[in-house]
Image (tube, rainbow, N blue to C red; front, side, top):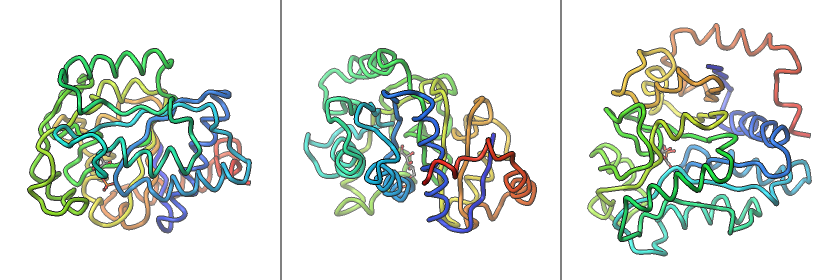
Length: 266
Ligand code: F6R
């Protein structure tokens, strides 16, 4: 796992955008992005938008797959992830809407919707880079603690902690749905590269558990330890509980130039 500690959230977003741009360049004209909702990747999306507008990054033929969707909201609800992805990813990055997918949490047959989502990812040739945030309880996607490390897209119950954390997007905590449709940990692990981005002290314990704790279903994000190409880009606050922080700083400072991705940010 590659761990990069940045001075602040702005620098973290810049570097993360460089990583995404590098993967897209290597993938050819039709890259497949995995996109997360939530606060963590917003600056990264803004930075990617800047690269697209500057003509440095071409995503006109890119596809995107969201990690998850609530189950129980009416279609078109502003906090449904279909809408959030449209506002924060599809429109600013100028993606072709027909190539942007979210799991169909509104479907009457939720199991069929889960299988269809897996099939759609396969048909696109798999995800080139999956962008991830981390829940304070260690979840990735909405794979809550004790999710199977081999799980595929399926319906899950949201943990009380997650519902409380996400209440800020709704009028009241009771309005946060109880269920979601989420890519499984096995689905996420199939992506060719994983990029986890986190900022702030509230994420420090989860980041330490993901990076340096045991690989355990109790901390779903720790499954990244078993991925060949996982990159974790965090600010100093989110890095504050890492035991080997100095080592991560040292390795990044001494990387060969060709391994760095700030060069993508002309
Ligand atoms: C979002 C998702 C979640 C969030 C996590 C962190 O699609 O799958 O795992 O990434 O809950 O949320 P924020 O970034 O809002 O702290």
